[in-house]
Image 1 (cartoon, rainbow, N blue to C red):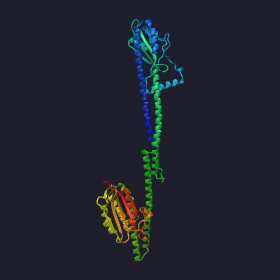
Image 2: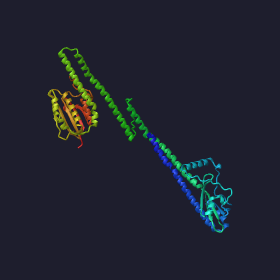
Image 3: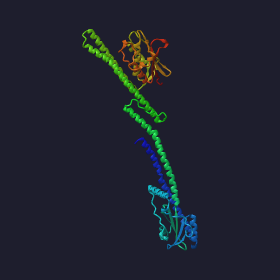
Image 4: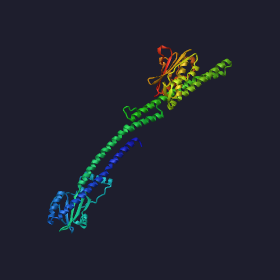
Length: 501
């Protein structure tokens, strides 16, 4: 089920709960009916007591007066079942039984609604009241029961137009025994129920409209943006379009806005990685073609060369090309797996002072042309960073190796490491030609080199690129600048966040 349908289902469930108020309304009607039955029974008993205390000839005027005051019909039947007094005799009727066929159409609609609601709540269908053709006590089952049993008997029926018709009978003793019958058309019960039902219908209608609007609002603000983001992510997964427009939703400050911006940034990062991988693959292909072409040329020449000196020269070329290919393959493998390894590495506190000091001997052994290395060692425990020790060693080794390769005969390479304002700064300076200002960003690109032609093939062009990847993987920054004081050479500066105490 989609999120839009779930939102609608939740709102519909709330409407269903509200619609359950119809069952409450049926209970309300039942309580009203019970109250009316009890009221009718009490009134009948009280009137019967009054009739017992007065002479028979005074009953008719009293019934008329009480019938008009209570808006009911009162009849007295003697023990034989004949009617002896009637509150409607000589007085206007206190209620009327309407003929449904003569009523307006909207009353038919109201009755249809009443019947529909009764069917929904399972209300019992009362027997239909039909006025007797001959008004005798036998025509009223409740009257006959009261005469036989003595106690008050109450009955409820359904008038022709659907309103409740309540009747109560009680036996009267005294000088002239008989039965008092009280009847009333309880139209007010249906009127109250209809008013409550109308109010509930208005509330239910308003709730339905509000739920629909709320569902549309939630669909527009939740489901639709998520659908757009899902479609954008699907297009990214297919990879058919180079640039996929992931909606940013800049006005959203909620979780969906955060998700949209995160997906956008992730897509841009993924695109940059793909572009970088494609460029790297192209660069690798280009860099491998040169030594392979040189190697093929030397091998082909060896087949035709008979001069031993020239053959030795060709073999030297082959060895240099193989060594160059070996360096390229090693550095390419290092570069390709560097990001993944750094993302999985568990960083620990590393003191750069002892780490750099442990590598001095190998640098001095590799340094040629009388190049000297000077190291300003920091105090133990001051130049501590969080990182991977082997990668940090590779970083410093690449930078020092680069400085040695550019140093002149008898040059000096200076290494420093110090803690400054919560950061650890490592500087490596050489006395070489330096780096032109317009190339200080490019020197960190893969396979970029500004070495002289005589050094061609001796370096892979990946050392500084690897160094930059290691620095950024540790949350640091690397840059190259001129040496201070106007001195000749290049100065590489690496800044790491210091490890917390």
